[in-house]
Image (cartoon, rainbow, N blue to C red; front, side, top):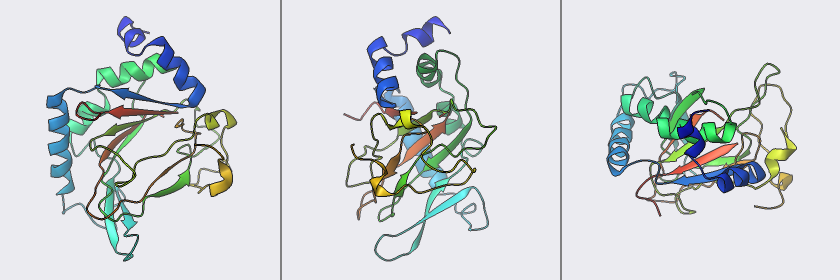
Length: 223
């Protein structure tokens, strides 16, 4: 591991991450990088030529009141966006994840989630969808382009549940967890997490790089 990776996160935060299954890293990106990513997210959202139900990179979410189908996500996105590609493999992000791993980190997959106003959100789930041949060292990294709150669909995480492993059948399929699967309010890939619905007039954009546990990157302008 490089000296830069070792210095990327303080030892106490690394211990907290392994205990809770998630951590938040602040001021990871510069103002310029935040501005570039914000503008790029708007540009990519405007790619109407790609938004089609037959395009497997597109994901959709129904409006929680009207049931209207709303465009929600490009998955993947880095081949559409040099800026997203640069952020997904940003040395400071990779060094932070390497500090958690204790070894180099590499990008596995990526997506840009827009979560427009009224989007239903995501049910309680674990990011880790297991095949027998899958490694168990994935880390989900979320770069919050917009400030997140209960009003615009913040991701919720549950400390310590990553130690319980996969809570659903390991069959390579997505499984929603019942609400009683957790009893206290982590985001390791095996820590359950829902995302609240987005209220009227609010939106939340996240660039998610799945090196997959959970690392939340709060951008420079966020408190």
